[in-house]
Length: 278
Image (cartoon, rainbow, N blue to C red; front, side, top):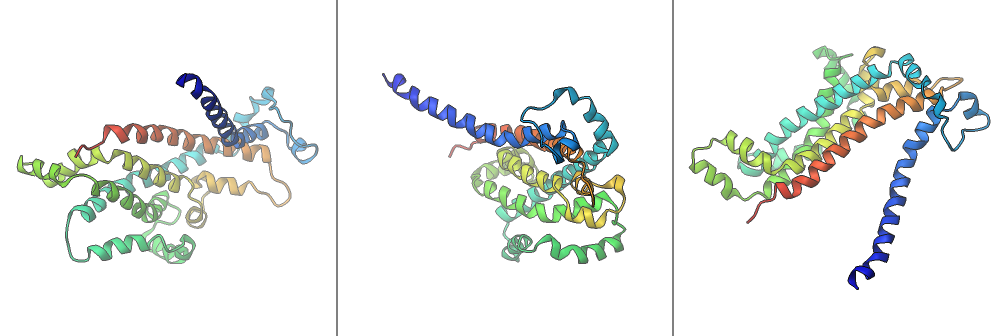
């Protein structure tokens, strides 16, 4: 009887989940549909509800014409570099703030928090002057450093919260057995905070992947533009190739979506795999 009673509720849940999925996936479908539409259709009669799949062979040519792969490669470099550098620096900073006692610890935590109070647009001019001095103008590595400065504090607080929940006795036992401080961090702490590191990776990756302001200001060569800046350049004064814009935007969206789905599985599995029994 209990199974029968749960069936109507399960049906409602599945219907709601299906509706939410359709609602979330519809923008991606509409981008795909727009990419297969003609410019004359979009500006005149409007696009059809169903995509013209026979026009699929024209998409690679449109992407090649605007160097979409080059734009994606630049975005991937910025996002990957920002993620790796932010996680490496944030892991050490989070461990120090959680486990060590030192003068200025409160100020250090406040300083990291204060970086989130300043809008990026406020720092464009001083960063531009600094990048000119360091020779980082028109350099993708400079964008990685600039984006890391904003992403690393967020990742630090995410991982510090996870480290605070790990019983200190585990590290004390390892220390008694002769494990050095760096070994305690890499062999004990890091495996236990992998879910939080995955969450921090999502935040830092998307910060780097969606980089626009600094890239639009510091990068002058078209071959070094990330996809976000490249998409903005498609907007013409008299006409905008909407089908090309949507095809590039779709290709720009899919890698980030795939990355999120992969890391999301890591977060869910890590919740149980990295659990600590008291």
